Image 1 (cartoon, rainbow, N blue to C red):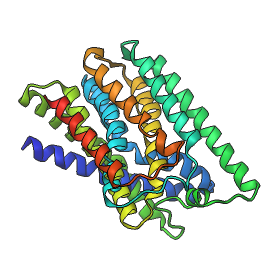
Image 2 (image 1 turned 30 degrees about the vertical axis):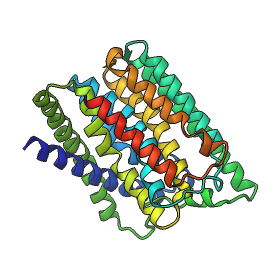
Image 3 (image 1 turned 90 degrees about the vertical axis):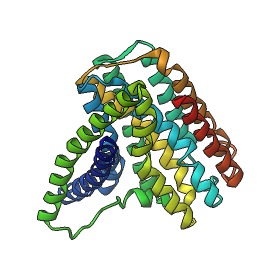
Length: 318
């Protein structure tokens, strides 16, 4: 039954996260907040809500391994699996989007995260540093987007930002309230179920909770990104997947661990996580050919990235 509870918790988390995004987006638009700001902030926070609640819940229960493993494992899965599987389906053309600046920010966020981890804990000091970095990144993104719009450069990426996912100008107030309630109630419920059952699974198999965080929890919370990029690949729109992965990884490191660390310190078992930190950083560096050299991500690269992820999971579980 513990696996059933884990699956149920994951499903509730994903559905509640989607409901919260829809409710928050439409509430913000009804209150007159510009769609551009909604896309860069509220949607970003909302789509990371499942991972955030898991990390907070795990931290409150003293299961820091699950909290950190979830973020580190998700970032690794985002590069190797979320880009690898769509690459097996179709060729992803990376030349259409300039992701160099956002990639360098993501790489800097990864190095900052690892440097803070060497302190042995993510406490309120680390949390303030990470959230401060996130605030600078968001302000810079908003300023760049507004400058592009003022200069009349309403490119496809900016137009997409100005139409947040889930936006419905005609959504009635009662429906907005329903989505918000479902999200706010479902997220902690799903997180509680998933963290509890994951802890029990770790005890059942005699493995550290970090391993469960790096594998079961991380893979589960990466499913929405995987589903999105697979559908984009099928629709021949997979060239935007690279930007989505970069943004998601940056947000995971700065926002999720930043907020969770302020609420309750997360202890870092460096002996357990050294290898996983190195893999996360190495996976990030694998994006260089696609970001700077504009290489297409085809079936060869897709098979290579997917095989690396399978090999990594096998090493973690051994």
